[in-house]
Length: 204
Image 1 (cartoon, helix red, strand yellow):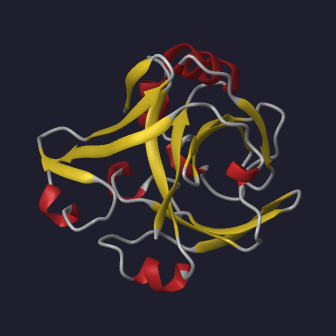
Image 2 (cartoon, one colour; image 1 turned 30 degrees about the horizontal axis):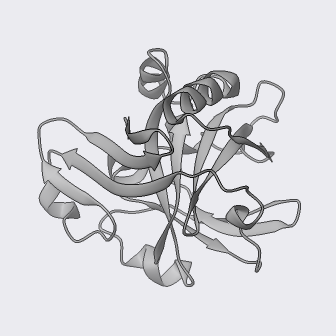
């Protein structure tokens, strides 16, 4: 597996875009709509096959077939986003999603096929829409085409340096790859990103 992307959620896509561009000092790029889940996004290339996704409920989108991913329909998440956009989750890329989903420390939910334009992928989405492991355990994604969003995104000069979290049950997640999880009474997710202007931390 590899880190595929970080997920920054916001009440509106405009609000999320302004937040990320102001914090990182670079311009994000148009993404598209997720018609099955009623969301839309913008993207930022972080290099090394990793990107940052800004996601929000699409006010013009279809009604979702289940609660929207990343907890966007959750009253608790909506209350948090009322205070501003934040890092809510991350996704890991795999070449065998069925195998790796079965190995996870918590249930990742059913595997759903998705597509947008030339992109086709499969992704785990819990039935309640909430990020697994309070956002510490990654959603899994398997791209079913040779293309990948980072190949179409311009260079941003930004690079992910570290991904870390705290959780009351950190011992259950210490073997997760790519993320350092430490014990704490509060759940917190952080991504340290090198930008053209210096180091920046995105947090939940």
